[in-house]
Structures are given as structure tokens and as C-alpha cells.
Image (cartoon, rainbow, N blue to C red; front, side, top):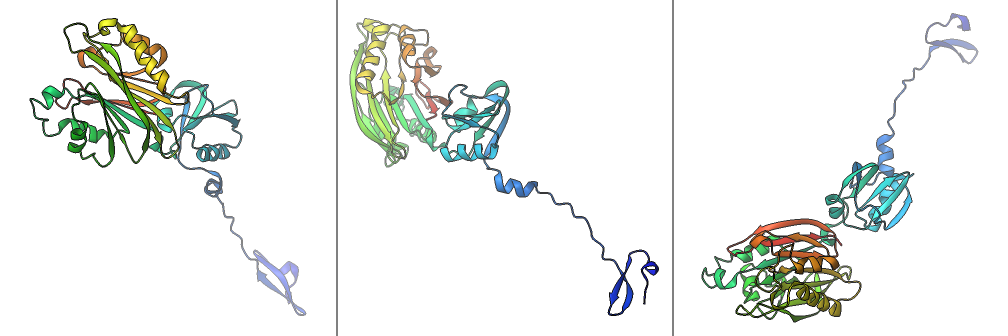
Amino acid sequence: GAVAGSCTGQQRPVLLGAVAECQTRPTYTKKEVDLAPQLADICDVEGFEEFLDKDAFAGSNAEVMSSADLCAVKQYCADKGYGGFAVWNDTAYFRPESAGACLANLVETSGVTFYINNNQSSTSDIKAVTYNLFWWNLYGIQGGLDGSASKIIAAANPDMLGCQECEDILRVLEEGGLSESYAAVSGPLALAMAYKVDVWESLGDGSEIVAEDQAGLYGSRGVQWMRLRRRSDERVVFFMNHHGPLPVNTGGATGGTATAENILNVISLNAEPDDAIILLGDFNAQASSETVMRLAETYPLVYSGVSFGGVDHFFSTLAVVSTENLGSGGSDHDALAVTFAT
């Protein structure tokens, strides 16, 4: 048979019984295996968007944890429903604000990486609309323009609505196809509100006179309010609708500071400490007026319109995700919308 030295190349001697034979050695191919996709399947949490050198709501920390295991941080953020988290100095800082609010409020911050949790449902946001309907003209003279105002409201699809110069909120809802999905709250002095009944339940509502026009004008001016509790998480919003006194920027017969104080007193007497506050309407007062400046000392002024120099406003304790001017729809005021984070 074969001797060890007589086998060449890829052959080797193999003993078969008493005889040695030369056999070819098997060959082995080295296979490179990329483990990255497998590891990603194991530890990556989808739905997060990374922003280098960005931060949002710095200092507003729901919780803090080590960022050594970024996968665990993402998973925790998703499980808790936080809007995102900032990573700095090997530490993750979770933000309780919504993903939309975090995205809208990103600012340049060297050395910080921010992760937006796009898994978070946007249903946690609250959209509010204010709209002076110019009733005597839009509905009295123009016949409603085929429901033009209602179409604007329906397209906006707000959680809650505050109208001024509104003589018939049921008509407004009906012409927008909203009668089944919204509850109407009619108030005095042509004030009216509405809210989505499948999302919110009412905890009560009311109204008060807070000002008077100067002599020879239209008389009393009021506020209308409601407390709404969200069915999904029991979050409560105190929502107030106001139509302010004339002439513009005067605060009416008793002045802007007194009007503002009266509004604040109504909120204080009817809102609970944990309520989120949304105050909106046609204040007949621009941003530089005594009324608006006094209100802004207590509740941040977050958005203003442009009609009549900017007399329609939103004040709120909530963070703003977005603002929108929806147009006039035939009124002499624009409908305004603000989406808030909760």
C-alpha cells in the first residue's frame, strides 16, 4: 500500500485494514458571518428617530437612567409611553411631553443626542379651536355661505371648540356633519362650545359676566367654561371661552386689568389644581393690552391670530405641538387651532 511519504498535495495516508491508501484531504471554505442583523433583531427597538446635538424640554425629566444599554433605554421609553429621551454623559433623560411636542421643540444642544419615540400614539395630543363666527353677517346676511364655517371646523377635527358670536351651535355642528360626534354647550351672550363625545366626558360647565363694554356699545361680556375628562386616561382639561369687551384694547368700562382679574377668578373658583388650562377666544384685546399682559402673567400666551391686529388668543399651561390659522370662512375673524401635548 501507500507509504506516508508517497502521498502528495492534498492527499493523506489512510489505513484501510492492513493496507495504507492515499486519499485526498477534504477542503474547508471559510464563511464570513455577519452577526449585526441578528443582533439588531435581538436588541433593537424600532420606531425611534435620532437627532444629534439636539435636545427638547431640557430639565423636564420624568425619569433618569444609565444609557449604557441603549436598547434597554429605548424599550423602557416605549413601554412607559414617553415622547422621547435625551442622552448626555452616559445618562438617559426621559421627557414626559408627547413625541410631537418633543419634535416641535428640538433645539441645538452640543453633545446631546435626542431620540423621538415615534411609537407613541398622537391621540394623547389635544386640539382646540377658537372661532368668532360674525353671526349677524355670515349667517344673517350671507346665509351661512353653504356651511363654510362648519366645513372649516370639520376639517380641523378639534377635541374642543370655542365660538363667539354664535347664535346656534347646533346648526354649526349639523352643517359640518358633526352632530353625532360632538356635544354642544350653548352659553349666554352668543358664546358656545362643543367637544368630542367619544374622547371626552363633561364634569360640569358654567358661565359668568366678567366685563362691560364702554357706554353706548353692546353691554355685558362673559366667559363660558367646561371641565372635560378624557375617557382613555382620565386627564382633565378646564376649557374656557371668552368674548372680550369693546372698544378694542380698553378692557371695557372697568379696564383691562379688572377684566383679566375677573377671568382669572372664574378659573380659580371652578378649576381643580391638577386641571390643564386652555383659555381661548376673541378678547377684543391685542397682545400689548393690559388684559392680555395680565392674563399672560398667570397662563402663558401661546398663540395669537391676526384679525383686528391680533385679538384672538390662546393661553394654556400645556406645551404646544403646533398652531394653525384655518382661515375666515366668510367671518371677519380667522378660525385658529392649537394642538397641545399632554
